[in-house]
Length: 171
Ligand SMILES: [Zn+2]
Image 1: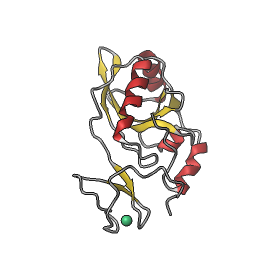
Image 2: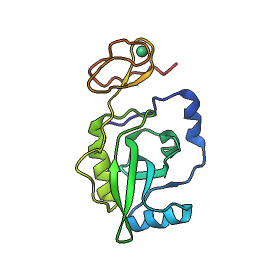
Image 3: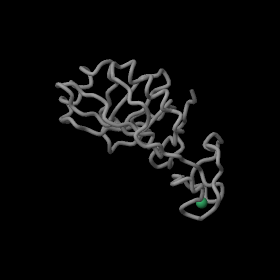
């Protein structure tokens, strides 16, 4: 499994130090207690990351993944939905939508593993798979739609392979 480092805009990286509420649930009951304490009701959509030590961590859906991860590299990141099933939160949907980490769809394996470790049933796959590429020309982050590997900003061709593994940063 790959470790994804933060690749998003530098001004958002500053949020790595922000003290937002986060939960690293060890069980559905722990998540349920945190949701109640933070004033959420099911169904709820949250931001999630899978930490380097393979733990699921969630925070408010409007928080940046880099804040949820405290700026550290992650094994997976995206959005997660929980719904109510007999008083317990169960996973409703899961994606890899994170423009901060731009993880590949294959990070699903890490997300599923962390969910199961925390006592949740993992879905069979991402509800929606996002394909991210760094534009080689304008350096922007593009989401590939309908297998059209073209930068939405400048029209340049995007590489077919995931390309956030270099050391260059967004401008
Ligand atoms: Zn471009």
